[in-house]
Amino acid sequence: MRLSGFLLAAGCLLTVPALAADPIKIIGVLELSGAGASVGTAYKNGLEMAAEEINKSGGVLGRKLDVRFYDTQTNPGVARGQMQKALDENPLVLVGPTYSGSVRAAMPIAQKAEIPEFTGGAAAQLTELGNPYIFRTLGSQRNSVPKVVNYLAEQVHARTVGVIYANTDLGKGGRDVFLQSAKDKGMEVLLDLSSEQGQADFASDVLKFKSAGLDAIFLSIHEEEVARFLKEGQRQGLKTPIFGEQTLLNPIVLQLAGDAGVGAKGYIPLTGDAPVPTLQDLSSRFAVKFGYTPDHNGFQGYIVGYVIRTVLKKTGKIDPKLFAETLHGLTITAEEEPGVLLTTTWDKNGDINRAGFLAVVEKDNTLRVEKILPRAGE
Image 1: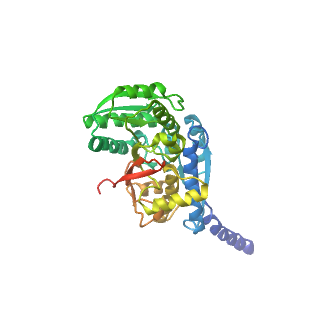
Image 2: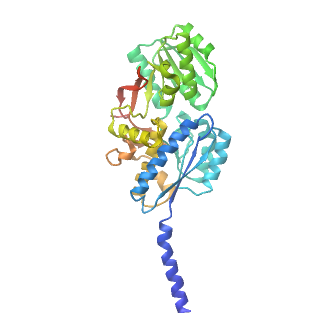
Image 3: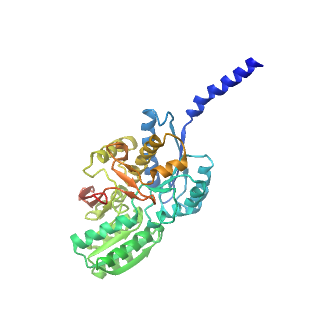
């Protein structure tokens, strides 16, 4: 009896290191097919790249990162179901979706489970709904769109402007912030056109812009539609300067639009064309590994891996609620953790404060960064 009891106790002790070495589950719920496949796949690749590097260096707290993915099919209803499946695996954190409409549909499930969720969705309202478990990896349109409007007012001296937006959370969110910001700057919005995600024909829209005599056009539409708009604009000889955000300056847009995008300008949060060594280095390594230049989504996915490592080092334990509490108000510097690429702060709502860039599409179909926009308060 005593011997068996001793062996039983010894067996229990022997299981402790094995349990301590269990991998840390990171579940991505991303757009891996459908209209957002290029976006979600880039995010996935960036996260996998970071996890691979972290695991090769010994993992975190003696554990490896176990990264798995579910496909939203770029469909909010599917995203909600996939989020529940992801939660059934008891992850430490969730990553995605990146399309704002899917985030809105799936976010309440993660919130109820009290699991931190990173998202690349830019729609302003995502972090204004009182969810303490949502964290951005991309700046809110509430912060980025006014930077474009400021440029229009101060550098272009635009007085009359027009906007075309997608009938999605991203499109409508960008449009709403643009209209208010333009009004604040004394601009007159002469055209305010809606479009559909997946829209193939922009001939009538371009004709309206061409006939309006505007000083500038702002695009708040998705990547493939941006390329179609630019190509139609080139076909019709549209000369009005075109501005936008990251969807306008995405590498896939430059590839699809060809020289139709030359001269377009806008705000971009992360790019290997910026004069920042950490961004340039990752862009080069990502291109070697995956065979294409990363867009801002690839950078975001990579950053998430190192944010997770930094927070876990600070907390010293695998605890989702403590993870969320620790990330609120946290600043991670690029000196402290080069994997975050740029010094970033997450506020009480999960919004980020990070430097960004104003860029223009050059004749060789590359981006030239015209101006580095520092972090707020710097």
